[in-house]
Structure formats: structure tokens, C-alpha cells
Image 1 (spheres, rainbow, N blue to C red):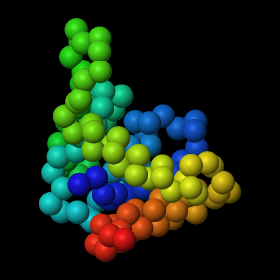
Image 2: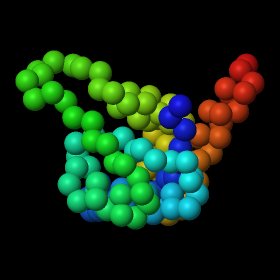
Image 3: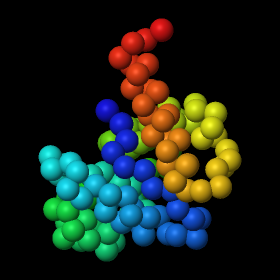
Image 4: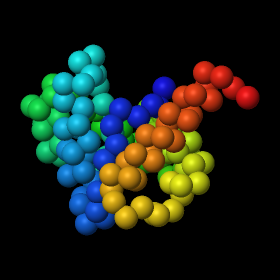
Length: 123
């Protein structure tokens, strides 16, 4: 469905793979039915083994075909892109207004709650 399970806002000098460990650490013990996590090729490497050892999650890397030179819809990747598009509709998240990372994370949660409420009761 593309709903947020955890949000981590960190400094720009932290590599995405290291930031992914922060996100996955927030998931520990909270979602026992979570077994498979899809990620793009930027998260390949040691993170796959770390996710399995830490949470028992199968981190599946979605890759483009090497001979493809045009746009191609990748499996499960569209869910992430759609969710980011939903969040970008929130004006407060369109720019980096916040001084603290905690308030940025809170605004991401608020935006997702707003989206879920609109789904429950469309106007």
C-alpha cells in the first residue's frame, strides 16, 4: 500500500545504506509479520546480510536489466515513488523548514496520517 512504517531524517553526510540501518533498527520488534523488504540497487552489499542477521528480513534488491536504455517500470519500485509523490504534496515537506530532525520526522508522520484520513473519508 505504500504506508510509512518508520521515518528517519538524518544529515546529508550519512550514506543511504547507513541511513537504511537507522530505519530498519526502528522496525525491530514492531512488525513481526514483516519478512521481505524491497530496495533499489543503491542498497546492495553488506546491508542485505545485516538486515537478515538483525531482523530476519529478506532484503530483495530490485535491479534494472543491464541492457535497458529506456524507461521501465520496476517491480515494487513504483510503490516507493508513489508514496514519495503523496508526501511531496504536503507543503511543509516540500522544503527543509525544520531546525530539528525530530520535527521533520513528525511532519512526515502527520502527512501520512492526513493521507490515510482522506482515504477513510474522501471529500
